[in-house]
Each structure stands twice: as structure tokens, then as C-alpha cells.
Length: 277
View 1: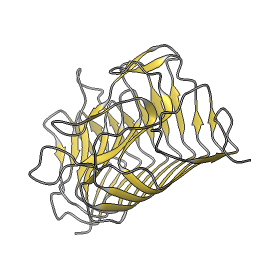
View 2: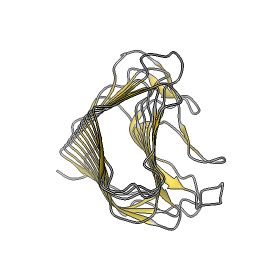
View 3: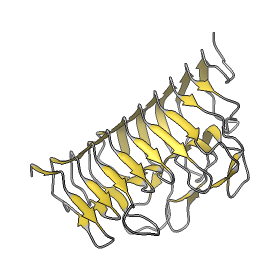
View 4: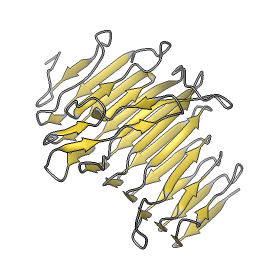
């Protein structure tokens, strides 16, 4: 409890930084992961700051960042290239804070809350998500199975979600497909939008974001053009978002995909239908 790793480099598929189940109150600062893996199984209050995750030395798929079962994760000022940032099995409330990072060329942000449990707050602010065809960089927020289960009931809940001041783009400015994410053995969320949701949320603000033109980029499974937001009903017990607010965004010709049962309030947007003025 109480540790830091500063300025270290993890090179190769057999290199790991793993603080285990009780490596709480740790900081990872200014580190490089080159095909290396960062993994936790419950470490609380973990802070990742100004670190680089990119496969440079070796060919093939890169390493991974897999944070599970902890609370109060903070990821700030880091760069992800070909590395998914996955934060899964959240079940003890508290918050997750993700700010001022770069997600490039196949680096998705995945947040999953355990069935029947809740996360108090999720803040995603000031990041750049830069996709290219076949290598998407989008947000997936969804459910996670209970321990011992291979299926997800999507009964988890996030009380408050802020997605603000981010840039979402197809930096290649060319058409092509990007891919969804396998949440469990039997559940897969599609990559239909820059923000993809499959979980109940009490309060959600999407504000002050820039959604650049998708330039013909599509979801691989449905063929839908990538949109601003996709709310996907993946479980019969999944509930709608109670209060969905969409304000002060700039959108360049990207659609929005929400169920007919889902209501939302929008205003002062450019390129989106405003329900209030």
C-alpha cells in the first residue's frame, strides 16, 4: 500500500506490471509499455500519469491495459496506440476519472460495471479519440458478468456520467470498417458510434465535444455509419438512461442511434437536433 513506479520501460509480451489484489494507493508515472501489460485484480486508488502505451519494438498486436475490480482509477495525460484501456468488473461504487489522454489507431476505452452493482461517477474529459479504418478508437460503456458467470444481464448502473470536451475523429478521412468489443463469451457491443452504451445510467451529460465527420467509417457488423451516440439494448433487464442531456456539441453529419423508448434533452448544439433553445 502506497507505491510508485516512475520512468520505467516494459518491453516485450512477457513483461508485466501487476500490483495484485491489494496493491492500493499506487502511482505509475512517466512509464513506457512497449508490448508490455499493465494488469490489476482489485488495486484501489491507482493513478496512471503521463505514460506511453505503444507497440514499437515488436510486430503484431500490442500489449494491454486491464484494470479490474478496483475503485477510484485515475488515468491522466497518457498516450495509447494500439492498446485498449479496459476497466472492468466495477462493483464498489466510487469514481473513475479519465482525462487529457490520446487514444490512437485501435485504442478503445472500455468501462464495465458488474451486474447488480453500481458505479457512482464516470468522468471522461478532454481526450482525443483518433480512429482509422480497421483500428477504431471509441468509447464502450456496458455491463460486466458476476464472478463465475459467462453471461451478462446488464443490470449494473452508473449514477453519473460526464463525457465533455473530447474530440472524436476519423483521422484517415477515408471509409472503412471498425469493430465492436467482446464483453463476455456471449455478449458483444457494436461499434456504431463514437460513444456506445449498453448499461443503465441515472444522469448523463454529453457536452462541449467535437464529433468530426466519420468520412464513411462504419460498424463492421451492421454496416451503420459511425454516429455520435449508440444506445444498444443487449439485455432484457437493461434500463434506459433516466436523464440524458446533450448540450453545446459540434457534430459534422454523424447520426445518432437511440431506442424509441429513450428520451433526451438537447440544446445549443451544431449539427444535432435541439429539443430546447
